Picture 1: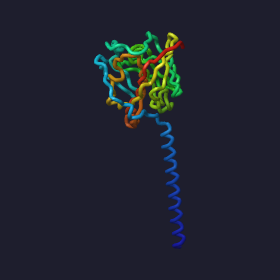
Picture 2 (picture 1 turned 45 degrees about the horizontal axis):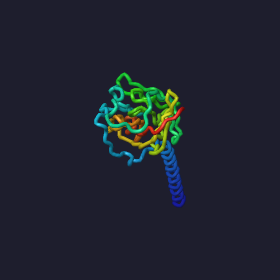
Picture 3 (picture 1 turned 90 degrees about the vertical axis):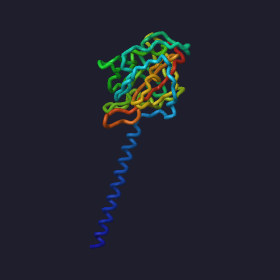
Picture 4 (picture 1 turned 60 degrees about the horizontal axis):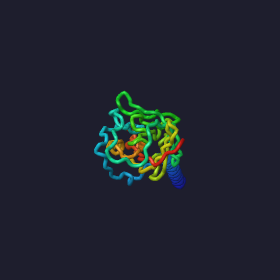
Amino acid sequence: MSGIASRTRRGRLIAAAVGVLVLAGVLLLVVGLRAQRQAPQPPASAAIPFSPSPSADSSTASSNSAGTSPGSSGSRAPAATAKPVKGPLLSRSVPVELEIPQLDVRSDLLQLGLNPDRTVQVPPLAKDSRAGWYKYSPTPGQLGPSVILGHVDSAKYGPGVFFKLGALRPGSTLSVTRSDRTTAVFRVDRVVSYPKNSFPTLEVYGNTDSAQLRLITCGGKFDLSSRNYESNIVAFATLVSSHPA
């Protein structure tokens, strides 16, 4: 009987070990799948020091689970700085389409205004995730920072239009087609992740001496308790040229 009992115990141990291995394999598979769906993040080295213009807007930025709001004051973009203007400029024209070849992104642009509580609207969560231009910022190609927001993802629909924004790298180009049938071409300067609790409002939304673009989405870790991302990813870009659409 002792031999039978011993063999029985060994059988149970083997079965338990196999069960642990199977469970470990399942866990690794789940972790792997989650890792594949995690949005790419910019390198930490991208967050270099910045000295804002003395005349930059000092309004504070608010945020939510989809992306950051470009300021809660509802004021239009600050007046041009006294510094000499650098690079090309375009006249005002509402943007209609954004294209980021490196990320395989092409999106019609919604127009975003302000919510009743004076926070900035974000694009609606939808299966057809689209980016939106904040209409109280300069139009792409005008002097100052033009602001475009997009979702990183959603629990219902998965990856959003800016899911891969953190993978954008300096030197790459993107374009914005405008209603006057011109296409503004921007070169990416840097892509940075900022904690939402220390978002650098002046750096992102302050006055500039050239035509700039800011692409903004959520990033960093996802807080399960608040169901919000803890950071924002911001791509900074500068107008380098334009051509007929």
